[in-house]
Length: 380
Ligand code: IPM
Ligand code: MG
Image 1 (cartoon, helix red, strand yellow):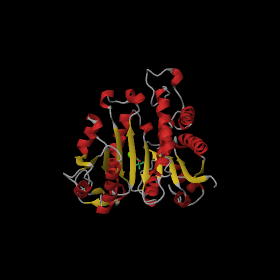
Image 2: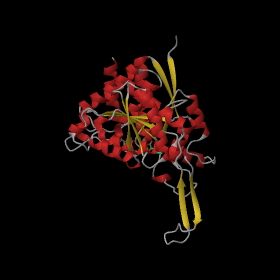
Image 3: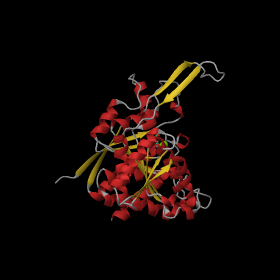
Image 4: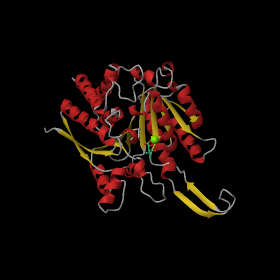
């Protein structure tokens, strides 16, 4: 029998994207070698890089060119780094923005479910803004709805609206619409309950049911799931309270499930429990090809300097092994490798503090190498 081959559509994107993607590809090569599979990576354009390339080629300007979407659909998994940057911060209505590429690929691949595991690495407990005793036992799976709600509702401007101007004269109004259907809610909340059964058996569904109709529907669906999953401890929490609870008592959460906008905000907040946004990977799942990406952005301020933390990108590979290829053994080794490297004291600048010895500070490439070396030891 020939070697198993997986085709991965790699999307380096903008800013630090290409630098951290390079480390993920080296890790994939090492995993392939250890597990006797072949990962064939093929780069495609997304985000600002795609905007520039399509413009230069005289094609319709796009942050997600059709060939990228086709390649993503034809692949076994998509690995994305990051999109965006000040160069493309054009806020004029109708301008093409890098983020549109990200939203469009999620929508077109039907990726309605986004998982962001928040895991505390013991060695980094001191890097968190919270005191270490608050981080004991923290292990949260954030399940975010990804293709509905405000981000995909109608966005528009109304001009010359009577009374909308600052001085009581006519002016502009902007409208964003938030809609959710029962089935969009149920497929996400159900997944959260299924996941909780394989974890600590608790689901916190986050909404704003005291104000929003979409949240009241969300809560009804959650209560149906609570009735169905008797072995899971389900519950509701208002989003403002949840934002507070995440820093007051984060260990109370197991699976946290919520709609798109709340999930976007709460996952950035939760990432800081780990000490750096550079540690948080994500998996986006749905009906078709799955997509894996760090939760952080393109960090244009440090792009090209070789100092970005590649760990969230490498942990996105870990999630890919788990959810797309059922290679749990290799996934465990990647996670253990990251743990080892941090235990040994190696730090990229975002993780370093005044206590970090100079000879333990690493750039992107060297951190990548450390994780890969540790992976080889773990898998052996
Ligand atoms: C994220 C990002 C994106 C989002 C942006 C870049 C559109 O913040 O993945 O969390 O809001 O989904
Ligand atoms: Mg975000």
